[in-house]
Image (cartoon, rainbow, N blue to C red):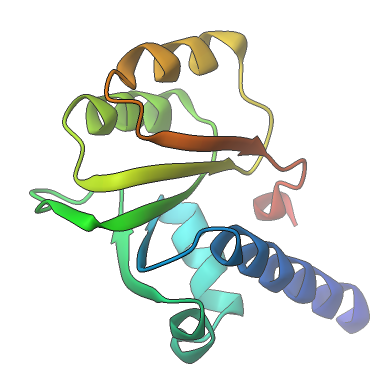
Length: 136
């Protein structure tokens, strides 16, 4: 139904708001292909700019430059591929800190891999949200 669809849009908007509001200062949203689609569908650029998000980037983009003055709000599906890319990111960080949000449950192995890669202790939070909107 249309109402159910609007509820989903609203809940995704609320979720993106919570992710970005909880991180002070200038930030970048670091997304995967699916989360990029979801975020761009429900959130206008102006809404996101209000939350001091100055940059949208795909985790899989080639040659991303260092922007250590920005804090990365990372919103990904917990796929093996995304975890591997995030491990590489943390070993060679492009941002000053990382706030990790996953659209579903992370395996213990994934959590361990991320913890080991975060040798500079730039990960400030790691949260799972039990709402995989992509199935809807």
